[in-house]
Length: 304
Image (cartoon, rainbow, N blue to C red; front, side, top):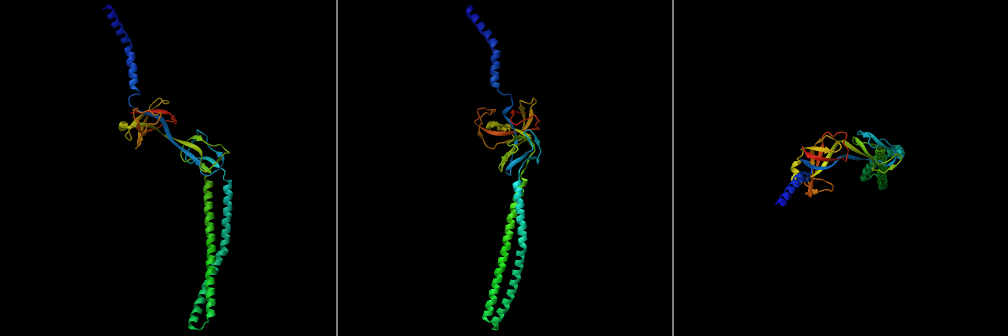
């Protein structure tokens, strides 16, 4: 009996010592994330790829990575000397067409007058021929002259039309060159910060080739994923609290978008319900993002 009693007393002592640690361990495992946790991810912002619409050698790059830019700032300049030379050649062609148009216009005027005279003569001889006072030969001669006058007028008009069409084509080519020359100056489409610069001065960029990537750091958002049973937490406009490791104070955010369709849980994504296979993407916009925020910072979202 003494042995049994001593054994029970020893077991009670061990249990008394270990129980607090066991409870803390089990409590920690069961608790997981703090209360209100809804998901985690990385901060995102709008990034715009800026391309050179005109290809050629880059003769100037105005910004480096990390530089702030305003919408409309010059980012790069592409050499357009060949385009300018071609434009001057086409302008000279327009001048030649203009010079050629003067005699052609005179030809059209003369041909029209000849036709009017031939038409009057034809009507007069035709009346005399019907009255029997003009011979068949006279009628045939004026008819031939009338048809030749019509042909000459049509020919002169066709020549004038050819010049007009040529001028329209050349002027369209000039307009295209003007656009390409303007596009040789690459402008920032939005305000932000240069996230990447893809070229160096002296390199050649193809038409449509990327030159810079600009990040708009005025708006950040966190994308999290929610299972179907948790969607009620993410009404549009719902307020959230966002924790970022690099910033001591939590940030405020609001739900700005909820995906209308489900998808399989992406890899490396932590959701409130880890068992959910199908989830919905949710964007939480950061309210008044501080300047310390950077794209790619890990963050967690909690109910506010």
